[in-house]
Image (cartoon, rainbow, N blue to C red; front, side, top):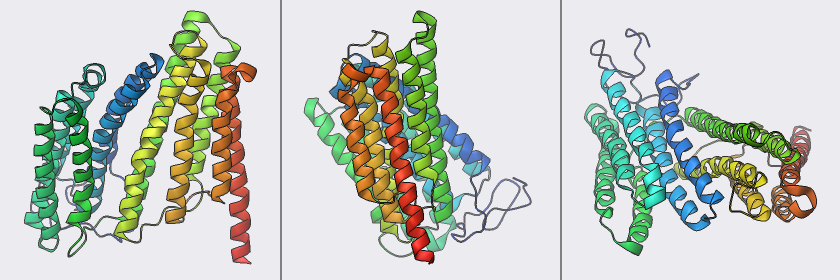
Length: 403
């Protein structure tokens, strides 16, 4: 950004700009190079979580693997989400802002380094250290906003105080024994989710930009879908090097690509999400935790399917098919709810989505007939049929409204 062209507020010097808050109606608001760079650091953490989930699934450790994955992915997603909404309201792109963003990027890399111990030894120490680093940086950002933006000071101070109190809880949780570790985890997750609703509950709302938020979530969706493609490609490449091409491997690769492309099409086709109220915005934003986590889990499931097809996993073909089907069904269901809530996307009728989800799940019992590769390919075809049916209904509905 040119130092002579301020993003918002008043520029005091070439390196510091007063944080006055962005215009929520600003035209042509787009993601900045810093935001895109920030996202790339989160790719590392998402990839590490998916890799560890893949190992847990392939070894048959479903419960422990999914619990660890849900916990780690929450830390990744929540830190990303908080930065995204703050940046939408207060991005100045000056030196202090960039340095605090750099600190958050360092924090997510620390978190990524702790993913393996969290899965393998239930040691969340490094994950918590990385997470707290990111959250302390956000406290500093909110305190700066409180100091420089009088109109938003009350909300900014509530954000800073709420985040600080919860971080003390995460640190104390490191000493929680046995079952209490998970009980306290759920309590602290609830506390984290409550902070934005509490901070925005009185007075003036922070100036986040609805279209900018929708674009940022769309970009992160593309990143997570890219992780699925990379994970599947890596697994297929390894299998080719060890055992050569087989029909099952080829069908899994084609079916996996169809699933990824279908989910992309469902997410991005149709009108963009509308976020008219804070309640809708928070519900839509929080719902994406499930969307992002399930999409990334699809990559782990496809890797497990490749391993099973090559007899390198402790899974039955039915179980391997479930590792692919369940994430797809979850994404379908949650996206349908989010699209209906915000008037976005391609959901023509919820029953069409439900029917597609039921058929995808039913296909997990088909490997004895179709083979594992055939089952995955059939899931991709069913997803394509579900998308097509919804598109047809949506087009007819819009045509009727215009008429």
